[in-house]
Length: 325
Image (cartoon, rainbow, N blue to C red; front, top):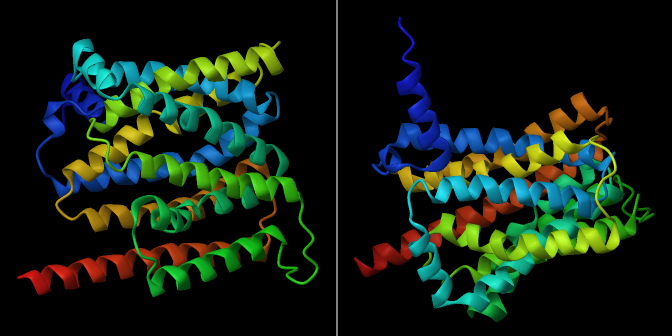
């Protein structure tokens, strides 16, 4: 079979950057994009730890943010004009200033600091609880009611957090780093808050993310220069660039395209449950961390809690549609 490099490379660019060819509904391509995003997200916890061996959290964030900004500029201007970006900016400039402070600035500063203090096998699952925090914050900020299923999910999820954080010693409450656990959980609040503030944002996702990084990256660079200074070696640079490309840039666009292409969004969304388990395999294989049984038990509790919450919400929505019909 003759390999058509031009055709294949064009399709690959479309997968990464969302060109027009990807606009038609196609479940197979949606699953491919979704699986690609999940596989890439599974690698970033390992990349965080590798980069943090040589860089401070702020230095890592500055390199990653600049890299991601370049990726987003390429992605957005394949589909939009600068005038489109400016038009959306003028509609709500302070919204994007606030969102940029949350992501990439505050969220990643706190997340990377948590990874700097904790083993990756603890920080990664704890960060996964942001979906549970989302349901809590939606009550005061979006006026949504807390359902019984949400309460059950929260109890299960935070039991998982306790198991992971204490390595199974629930009564001893001996944390590897209490501050690290607090920071990892604080990052989930910031990430959930970022998505809630985006809930009524009608700006196209890729433009919204670009505007966030255009506002947040200067803050990151200023804070890095003021507190830590420019890195004095190139060690950790490749890992930081990798984080910028695959944690903050291309992977988000792949996931966004997967959701746009999907005829069955739930099937794509369920792929995300693979990510933390794949991540543990890489953490053990590459970083050499011995994964303790408490991590597996806690992670199963967290993943089950999130899955149960999503299932209950989907069931409620389906019942509501049937009632209207």
